[in-house]
Image 1 (tube, rainbow, N blue to C red):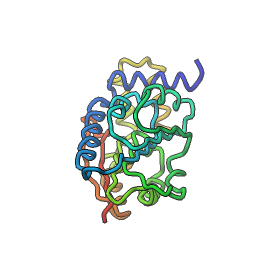
Image 2: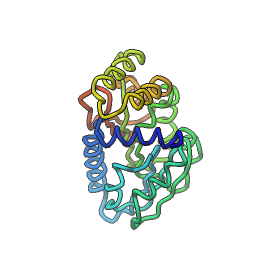
Image 3: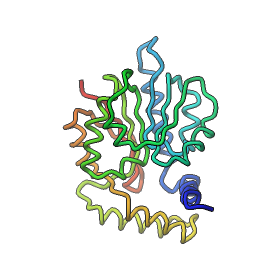
Length: 236
């Protein structure tokens, strides 16, 4: 099994055993999207959705299949995962595109003529530095329609918590509670966490978003004080 498949196999076990509360997060995401779509004006065209860090769509695909979208664009930095996402989604009534792309580079690019109505990102933005998270929030507003929505599902630090303290408690969570994973798989996750994860401080990122012209609302927060879902809407 090559490196990607080993990594992805571990990730799938994390999801399948609900070790990061994906089930509750998925339910909250579904409710948010369906509620937002139901509140749109009658006769509004199908919403254009961009999914930043779409992964394999293992949890979101069942929701997407019945949504009345106008179009869907799935972006991910890992090219091998895109065919898996397309296969998980299957045939739908709206056009879909799949693109290997960096989410910050997408935000920095010139917006397309038609604005995006719905932005979604799950467990991707925490790989950016705090400065680049703020830059992303500032720039992605240009891509979004005035009545659009950004759903941000991710891991976050507690207010005032240092990254080192966050990493230490998450590593303890993995070692003490992630028993479905073999020790080697646990270490894969820990290595990734140490090298690449930089979760935002909840209060600091909320302030940063508001300074960029967003209204912030927490829709769901997990039991482990890490995973959470935020809804951001542009301030008009």
